[in-house]
Image 1 (cartoon, helix red, strand yellow):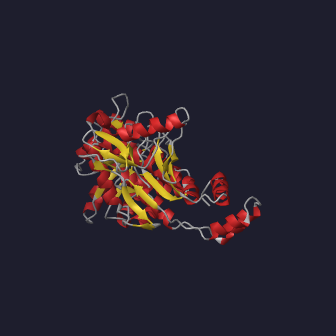
Image 2 (cartoon, one colour; image 1 turned 90 degrees about the vertical axis):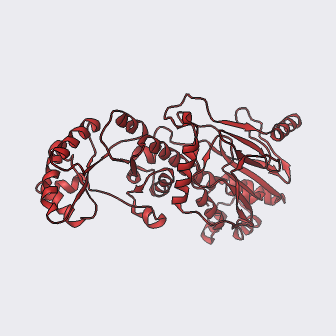
Image 3 (cartoon, helix red, strand yellow; image 1 turned 30 degrees about the vertical axis):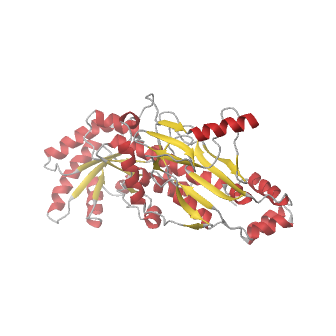
Length: 433
């Protein structure tokens, strides 16, 4: 039921006309957003899981019957529906570029049509957030960052899936406990300003928190005055040292973060605590982090929230799902600026360029990106750990040409070529159209 109504009406028309022949659809991104040089594929395993559990429940059938749009034959078809097709997809965390299939679905035409909205939703959102997170990781250099986006995400599911995608993209942890429970992502957190204000003083708040959670003490020091909070943190660190409790870090969440980080660092060092780290948060993104580090801000780690979870500067991707073969015949959309590449394909990666070719074309030397993920409606490979996907992303970003690891666009884009076989097929279909 996570589908647009027109997917259902098209499928009903196919069933009525007896059109259940095999069809293949490609899911891909048409263009990169402004300032983006690459994308990180994410949500692929979730998409495969969704296909594996595809069904229409009785309450949904009752609802659809009540619309008085669909006949009994189509409702009977839906009652028995499950995904029976094949999926080929890139691995989670792989770098992808425009027009390259992230996921290919081959199934009876009504099945393949019905899952369009679901697959676009899953892959678009997670790829968007993972790509943003990868840019934050680039900006952080050798520092770490944590996903703080849950409270500003566009809904509960977006927060959960966003935390998953942010981890694939490079976050080392998340503040969202449900993401930790479901995905095994490390969870972390400090305290809120409200916690500090409920105590008579910062000193009492810091003591209480440190004594309750002595293994990982990070104190929020900007509730009143940041420099004063840093001095209080030094005093509390001295007091608690005799109890065997160490202050790991302090967090600054507001104000001029660069200037405050410098002054706090000086206070901590002068107070005899160079080991206490500085954690910065508050409307951060890759641009702000890069600027801070370029100015030698002594920040050890970052919390990135709103601008990560919403991918604020590029809040959507132009993910599409297009028919490329039907009944063994290549298909192509000819619309101006929206044409797609026909036929079943493979993407071959070389050192600094990709080649999109027909699936049966021989392409020596390249690394094929699309792998079989489902056959006959069943997984043929287990879902990977998110740590494996994160490591794939890390290595893939490192292999990119340096010009693509910049945060602002304008450099020559990554080269994606089209094979002679696809070009010939385009010419053939264009003439026929």
